[in-house]
Image (cartoon, rainbow, N blue to C red; front, side, top):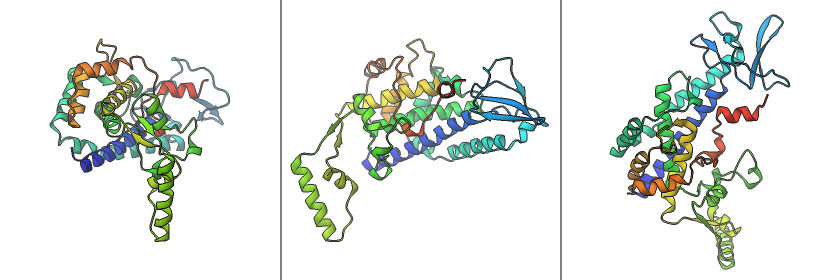
Length: 324
């Protein structure tokens, strides 16, 4: 695959990951997920409803809330006050906007140009991959399953083409913003063994500073990567075998979040599907090698790296954030 085509695919994969994660977060953020069907609403641990002035209200992260009980269900019908509550309408509107953006994303159309994409989809179907329980109950679980499988592939492509998360400097989080909410993906990638950091020598730093001075004297614009070199920030380099490991790691960890893979082999994402994903990248890797990499992430609590600061939050993680 030519470098220009790789960059276009990387850009589209990142955009799709962002759109999909927005849908998931909007789905989890819906105050009443079954409102349109008008069926019994299951209790949510970080939400509860109460009576105030004769009207039903929704509280989000209140100072006090009783422990939810499966028996404490709420019927939201056509004439229920909650159906027209502004907060309910806002959460439904956000979910609809996110779904529309995902439907209009061109990533899948691009992938259809690759014969191996059809084989990738067939591998998931034949292995009976299903939607993660955490995502069930949307307006279209069948469509969301297809998008979830595509999200796993998008993440894999991102990490194959960019194991150390080489975003353009202008798009990176400043160091002062790297905290519990905004993690440094490059640091995580290095710790995961996906690549190495190479620091410029003193001579290289001095040469970069001199070059920047000459460029500014001529009135030219200075490349951000050159400025980074002058500051002594590391280059990014990856070994030849790292992209394969990076793709396997990402697809394995992502699948644990968005898919159910009860296949009897440590519930791993199908190695054949990953093999077809690698074929898209013109990389021929055996299923044996793929399985060896996957074994390192059996029951792993490591986080996927694609779109890491988008915060693809599961309902279980949301429960931990709001432990009532």
